[in-house]
Amino acid sequence: MRISFGYVAMSVVLKDCSPSRTITLQNLSKIASEKDRFARLTSIARENLDNTQRLFFHNRANDIKIFRITSKLIPLATHPVTENWDWFAEVKDKLKSLGDYARENDFRISAHPDHFTLLNSPREEVTEASVRDLEYHLRILDGMRLDSSAKLVIHVGGGYKNKEASLARFIQNYKLLSRDIKQRIVLENDDKIYTARDVLELCQELKIPMVLDIHHHWCNNYNDDISDYLADIFSTWDGETRPPKIHISSPKDEKHFRSHADNVESSFLLDFMAKAKQLNRDFDVMIEAKNKDQALFNLMTELRQIPYIRFIDGGCIEVW
Image (tube, rainbow, N blue to C red; front, side):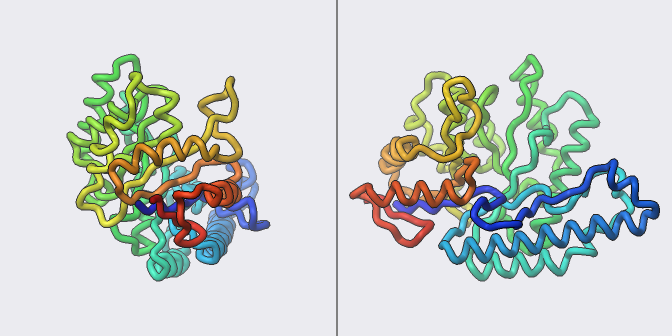
């Protein structure tokens, strides 16, 4: 059973390498002409993409193939203030270059639209904004010329005091999405409302791959043993060209148990690995920790002490 590891969006090891720089609306409004405002936005976007390329170099040097790009590559891309800005034309060369590098190195790229991307909202304007955000992310991945294995991870959304009606609304709105967006969407269980069981049933109905978040399952479940569902969760990835993916993080502390800790407790992962070993199926792990890449390196150091784990390289292990 091979397990590959990745991290989210930013490095704490590399200096001055943020891919998420932006500008406030207040500061943007101080720039007199629209042309100059767009030039400023373009400059920030291109710097973000340059820093993403630095992250890609860093990942290759450390054998890290699993990576989530930030949703903030293009500042204010979905805001009405930029509706006349053709940002794609300004950065398409850099997007193509990033995608070429990702394919050459067999990177498995994903993105995670923000929490306000809610396909089951009862408010039409929220749903419309959510679709625009998904279209923005789709344009980024298409601009990188990545195939449909590059996924968009989203949550089901809110409960809105009626989970059953909210699930039905998600199904209705999902079916209205374009085929290109549907091919990229994967669903994740959350830490308050939709459990792993809830999301699995939804994924099976709509034939959507499911990302299992172990920490979220720990926070929010029906006293379910995840072992009872793991085979079915992994089976939602059948037909995909990439292995199933899970998310892992550790609780920050007893009071803030839903928040992510700086690092990942290896015991959290080892417990899951023991269950997954019964299936003996390869999978990817996205580490969601405050220390980003350093959390990954720290975890790898701990795993080197485990006798039944063999390291393939710096970002991939084999469990005997």
